[in-house]
Structures are given as structure tokens and as C-alpha cells.
Length: 305
Image 1: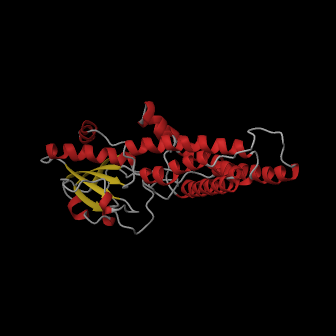
Image 2: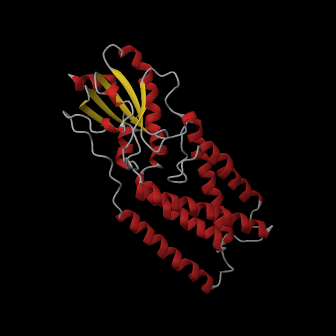
Image 3: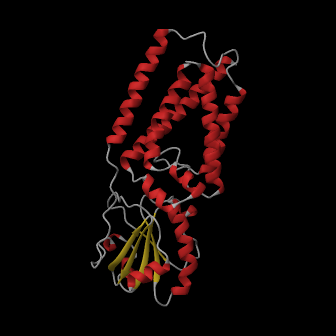
């Protein structure tokens, strides 16, 4: 039983460290909404859930995951580490379960690696809680005595704290990844040459929504636009343009029977576009641009006027 407990805690610790490393890569290479942006878009319990994926919280989360991962592996104060692990993964079950119920495309647990929250819940979070509960550290006390040897304690604690402080300082000092500049109004849209349906967008009035398939705000905005598009078909058209990296076509957030124009932004560069980005075009010319939160039709028509 003791060997099984040690093995399980070590595996779970390695999973936490791997997740933290992937989050570091995400922080340094991708656009992550910050707290202020989340605060302006959401309120209530949904704000709390979205806050868990904001840049500041992800940075805060990295040293916690690494620290807990090392603690689970190193065998110091085993029962206390076990208790911390089971509490943390019970919390993960709650958060991931919420994302499953509310249709999130990504659990947010593994940084740049996008995983359906249902898969994470079934394959990682619930098994971790169950295995920790079944193979608990029998015979271990929650708190000392006995105390671990000073040599073992300091050999683990000093490098661990140095690592956590260094990583945290580095991430806090790293500037956020800047998105593509907002389109300048009154000019032809410079991205038309990179879109496969540019010929159609070059004439008429269009509401163009740039989206990522795993973008939660896009997942909310696109169905709303699909719903209202037929009512405005005589005056304004809608287009949904996917930004690379492209998602699985079978899981597209654009419905198969959409009346909107569907296209793709090419892969000629690594586009750093914070989605959704909505551009109001008239004959290919930019009239207005919105980011993160999709405008209502009243806001769109006010821009036209």
C-alpha cells in the first residue's frame, strides 16, 4: 500500500509539473486575456470561472502547481502533501465539471495543449481524486514529529523555493504577447489578401468575425449572429473567418447550416489576433473594429451612422 501511494503521488506530481510547464509556454507565446478584460465582460459566478484563465491567475498558478508537484514527489510530510493533493484535485473536478456543463471547448489545464474538459475530468481529475482516496498514506502522521532529516528537507526545500521564485519573477517580468494591431478605420482592410473569400468581402457591407474554434467568447457570439443574420440579409452580411491554428472541422463552432459566409485566414504568418475580433467593412474599407466582446446590432448601426 505504501509503495502504491508513493507511486500514485509521484505520477500526479509529474502531471502537475507538466501542466505548469505547458502554462509557462502559453504565457510566453500566446495572447491570454488579463484580469481587467475579464472584469469588463463578465460578472457573478461566470466572472469567477473566467478569472481562473486570466493571465495574472495563470502566472500565479504556475509556481503553485510546480510546488505541489515537487511536494507530492519528494515524500516530505507525506500525509499533508496527500491531503493538499486531494483537496486541489477535488477543486479541479469542480472547475472542470463546470466547464463541461457550460460547453467550454478547452479545460485550460494544459496551456497551449487544448483538451476538452470532459476528457480532462474523466481521464485526469476524477481518477486522481479516487486513487489518492483509495491509496492514502496509512501509518503517516499529518504533522510531525517525527521530523524529516535536515539534510533531506533542505536539499529539497532550498532548490524548490529558488526555482519557484525565479520562475515567478521571470513570468512577471515577461511582457504579454501583443496582438495584431487594430485595423485602421477609413482604409482598405490589409488582411483581405490573406483570406480565401476576400473577393466577396471586397464589396458590400459586412460584419466580419475572426474566430478561433476554442475561443469561449466566439462560441457565444457566433450563434447570436447566426440567429439574427437572416433579419438583416437585405442590408448587411455576416462572415465568419477562422484564424489559424485551425480547429477540428467536426467540432466547428459555426453551424453546418449557417447563412453567413465562412472562410479562413491563411497560415502565411503566426497571427496574434485576440478573438473574437469583429470588423465592419464597407466595400473592403474598415469602418469600425471591436475586440473580445461582440457588438450588438445597435452598436454596429451606430457606427455606420
